[in-house]
Length: 494
Image 1: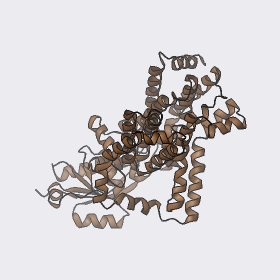
Image 2: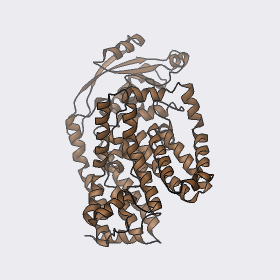
Image 3: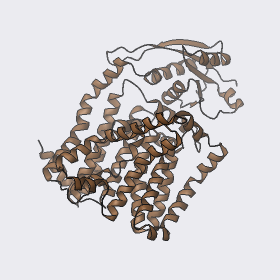
Image 4: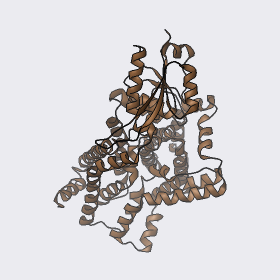
């Protein structure tokens, strides 16, 4: 049974074949988890975070309630591939796969080839790299960005290379353009630089200043947009997650730390069970004595722990899901102590588990889809495709012009524009088009039938073109729960 795994291990540890073997393995990883996502999520539709990004990508700007990079990636992706669930899940799985490849490259500076293979396999047991990654949003975008920023920063610090310094600055700016949460990565890396014994040499070199200059240059357009927009994303963040009491914040911070540890418990326990380290070795894992390894440890702990302190200081509520991009250096911490050795049989067993996990989940995916269907997925997502079909049918009855705008409930509007063939733009939460353009284009307004405010707004626009429909999404032979929607058609005024 382990013969194919031994063959895989041999390819991964062979210097002549390892890079190709890793890329092929990651390619298979992407394919398997993408197929899992297509099947397991086939009864529920795209997550609201994903449809919201499609809405943003139809109105590209320098910022929204989050920075713009995720929306730009979605725009680029769907400029090449069709807007479909399978293609979106494929994009989503590319994020952890790229992060894993960067981890593989980074770990070469700290681990021998056997431990590099083990470290890469261990990360695939963390739900962030598969289950959670299938929900493409501003958090998953950070996974490869944090990984490459950490990689280039460590290279820059040790070599003081102008190239790595510039790359680190560009990548750091990319992180901030992904999500402002990345300020904790930058603060953590800066703290790591300050506490390292070589800080004087580093800060007297040009490297840190090149990094800062490159980062500011890339960030400048977004910073200008922030200023002109009165820092609106920060107001959103404070409104949703801020102004909490100290006790609520403390509980949330502890939950963030405990939840983060829980997410990585499996790889940590595997290493501890296999290697049975003593106290000295465990201490060497957490805070190594060596200079380079200690720098890596500081670069790991800073971005992971600083959010808890920042939350307490600012009254911000945290969630452990936000730590999903912080695990780049976990294999280095767990496996770099010289006292730890990995046997061939241990590597093969870990690889076997990493291979079996997606295969088992792929077999279980139809059952998961049925369970979700029976429990009733959120109505804003499960029926979005059917609702889009109904909206387009009613629109075609009213006018031969393409559907360009969809208003009403934000979640429903984002869902409809994600599935509609005309690729319309969503109106809720987006900069409004000009009055003349909107009048000439017309719009469809979609509401939950029980949403009186949305219905009133739609009726004010099209009181004589209101349609109410019950939509049911069945899956295989399992009936879904009906949901009543109100649709208003506002034809173009040519």
